[in-house]
Length: 164
Image 1: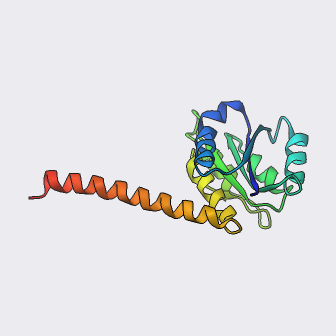
Image 2: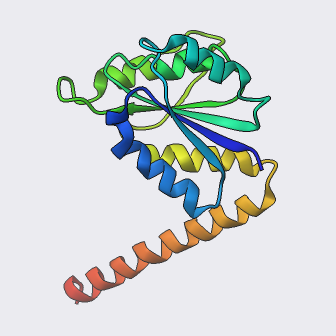
Image 3: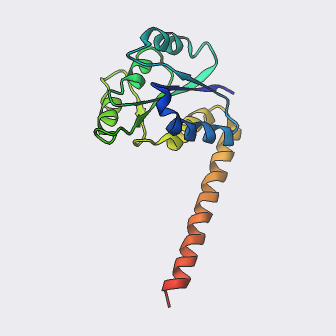
């Protein structure tokens, strides 16, 4: 199975990134985690991105806040799918990271999830890998069914309490 590369611009992003890590663990998807900054370690970020396909990666998740150029810098150096996680900041609540991540020039796509949307980033990566890994499709379908059952249980409790 191909690995998921997870890159964060700073170790301060780890509390958000851990949600993606835990989701990948739940689905038994192999991954590697790194701290590479588009601004402070551009050479290392480029080398990782450029060699990712040859090193067994199938998709890369890039998480960064504020001037969140990491996902775009990664995408510029690989043809693998890149998923950006804009990380919330104190100054603008993550809007600056969202806009930096989602506003990519034509030809360098970055799939972007919600601010702090690490679980969805991992699930999107798993969906991408499931195209060549049928066992992942089954796990995704099972998770959706379990999530549906949880909502329906809550609905039943609410209906019993408030509907006469």
